[in-house]
Each structure stands twice: as structure tokens, then as C-alpha cells.
Image 1: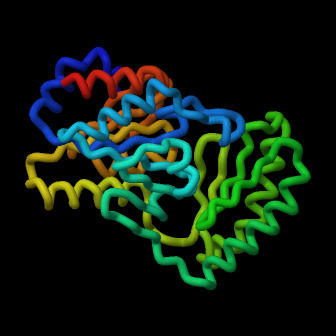
Image 2: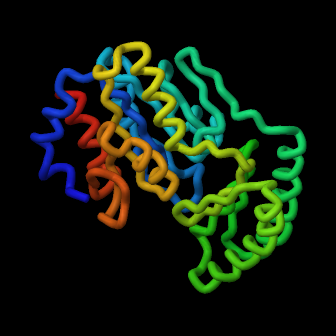
Image 3: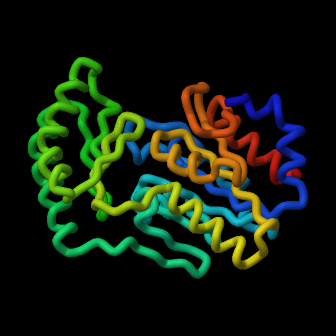
Length: 262
């Protein structure tokens, strides 16, 4: 994985004269990760840049987040872009309104797991349980390191029986464990779906996807878009399926400003 800004002249040529399908994570990509999810607020500079991108006819912009749809829409607050919540379970914007079909029984299971998780894990100081409607997030960012193994042990003990029966699905992010309905739908599926829609509208060779993210869940999209576009990991270089990396959210914003200029 190469550092993006050492290869930027090459990347500019890839992007030149292309319609860019720009797919962006939120936490850790557009704004630094905060200990409390509600404190991760996008800067005015980044918001103004997204507004410019949304109004430019060479771009189609979507924010793909693990947050609930309502939450991510409130956080970004820009019209005329597409919002994806709960890692793809909910999509809305620019003529799209999609909610992954989840049976009443599956919703009931999620609610029951939420009650058990809240009861058992809230006893550990620093745990935050977030109800996101179609999914649940158990955050351990504020835990003492010594308490993390106990947090994971209790979480696994509660969820394992439901996972084994195919009732729920567990995914792991940065300092967070997610409980979702057992559907095969990831950020990678969402990215490919958007790409297919744009190619159908504009032509097979006209659309160039760019995906930027920082989390484990973004790896699904990096893999899905391999050799189809440009994928960028935000953070210190590691074992990632992304093509390039930038060091932090400031460099992610710097890149967005640069491609707008291109």
C-alpha cells in the first residue's frame, strides 16, 4: 500500500475527464474519531468542501457510515447527496429510499439482545451501548485496557448462541462490536450497487469510483472495488486491501480538495 501523495500525479491522470463516484466513510475519515459518538462533529471546512463536491456535475457523492441513517444525516446535514446508514442497511437520497428487509422476528431478536447486552455490559464502567434501530453498537473506546477482555468475554457469551443459530451477525470495528440482522449486505455490496447504477446511467467506461475509509468494515468495499477504481485507507499503513493510504483525516480532506481542483 503506497502513500497517496507520492503518487498523486499518477492519480490525477486516472481521475481526469472521469465522472467520479465518491464514496466516503464518516468517523475517522471526514472527522477524527471521538470517544463519544455524538462528539464527532464535521468541521465547517470539510462541510463546505462536501457541499462544493455535491454541486459539481463531475461527482456523485455518498456518505457510507456505520451510524444510523438518521444520525449520519443529522451529522453531515447536506442536501442532494446520498446517505447510507448501518453499513448499508439503510440508504436515502437523490431518488433512492432503501431499507434492507428485516423480518419482525429478526427485529424482535435484535431488541431482546439489546436488553440483555445493556443489562450485562452497562455494569462495566465506560461501556456505551448504542441502539441504531436495525443494529446495535457496543462501544469500548472509553474502557480501561484491563477491562476490554472482560467486555469481549461477556459480549461473546451473550451473542454466541444467537450467532450459532443464525439469528444475528457480529462485525468488529475500531473499539466497537456491532450486532446486526443476519443479512449478507456490506459496504462492499453497497459500493458495487452504486457503481452499477451509475454505469447504467452514464456508460460502462465513464464512471470512476473512489472510496475512502478507515475502519475494518471499509475493507469489504476496498476488496469489492479492487481494480475497478481507487481505494484509500485513512491512518497509519497496515495490512489493508486499499490501493493507497493517507495519514489522517486532515490528509483525507486535502485529497478531496485536490480532486475537486482536478
